[in-house]
Image 1 (cartoon, one colour):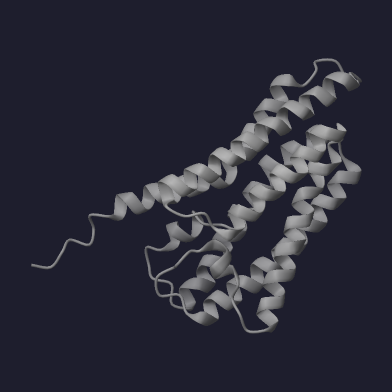
Image 2 (cartoon, one colour):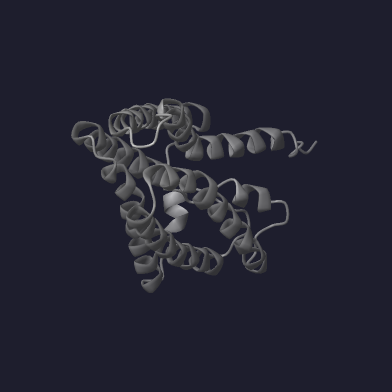
Length: 219
């Protein structure tokens, strides 16, 4: 009797959403902690610095917890998550030590630019490095599909790096942090969905769209 291949589908779906929580949960913790400690009065520099420090500390702890959850619940930690966590701890530590939020603000630009160089460079060499960064396997997707997905995300990361850098110089820290949650995250999901038609043309099996949406690259 052939095994019932549908029995594991709920587990796959659950793992997908755990992956999303691991990717974006620390950012939500950062935002909520900062808002909780943010001073009520404008111009309270000491209160603002305290809110940044507390938010950054919570961000670091949440990132480490997310790393542990990924290892325990998903059985793996992707290279992208490793790199992101290392940079959160490193730049977050500098933010706390120097009481300067610019360190944590520059972290996204650096990681976006780094991923862009890696993916675009890999594309020039005919290598779809995104597949290895995500450690994801989309059933049926051809090598050409992975290569196109890699270059598309590489270009998108360039755009995100530019946007983040412009925002550092043009808006307040509070507005920047809100944009990370309410602008960058929706943009990433929207861009992910725009890639699905291309992936379907390159062999992605019907029913795998949810898996693609649950595994967007992140910073």
